[in-house]
Length: 338
View 1 (cartoon, rainbow, N blue to C red):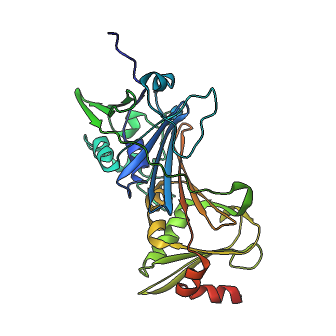
View 2 (view 1 turned 135 degrees about the vertical axis):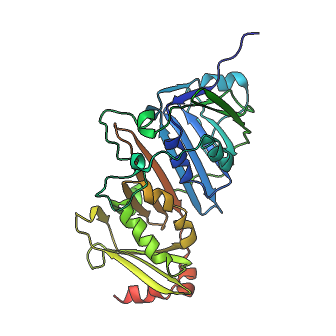
View 3 (view 1 turned 180 degrees about the horizontal axis):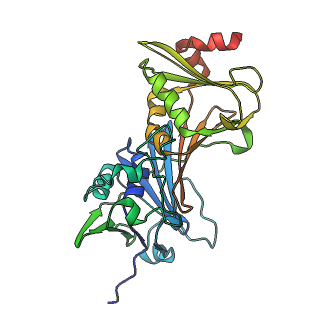
């Protein structure tokens, strides 16, 4: 009997970029994997009120092969829950795996490359994030820059089969097969892109600094205020057992690269959920802060790699309802009186 080709195979010359991106989603026990001809999408969620996703474009791999027709031959429904397949368009492969197990696998040989290879430019206020690679024309997975001599191979044979990760380094090969589970039936948290109340783009490290400052109050809730005219144009405030704090931003183009606010908005979110995005804040170059008329918040982080590679990590948050805000957030009354 002839051996059937795997549904998906991909090769990169290092595991660290994949590891860094997946660590941004490390607050969840399982991650949902979606394989498409364009790349890999990893999605996690918490309590149906927060969702995080990371997309790895196929261009970030030295080799990327996907045979969607294999899904139909193998049998089984591979449609993503909550979506309808367009007629004539192949279904993506969707399954779940243990996120902690995958992270442990990716660092099985150790990923402690020299810090100077992965530190940002010295002028950058944060170090230890995604590299500001010195060599031009190199790919994001260049093993010389990663300080690794290994190869990372990913493969998936089809529905019901394990997700295989093979790591090669200095003549040693380790293969780990992660058990796959049925995909979750939950849908994406909807963001109404045609009804955005605000869209603000800024350096991710400035948002990271603000969240760290607010966390000192042991905050339970974060209130985000955006105003098109009156200052502060963007304000983040938090109240906790240790006090209250507020961080304000003006709409100076040197501070906020993009500032599109249709009207004044005040929305409150669970602070612990926002903190789940801290790893992405620390390694990303920019963040797009979007909110729709329903108060759904999207934090989309752009993580750049030298040589043109770019990945995005997106988080979405459901706000507290107005009645809850009035009961627990005394700063709202002060905001409304301004």
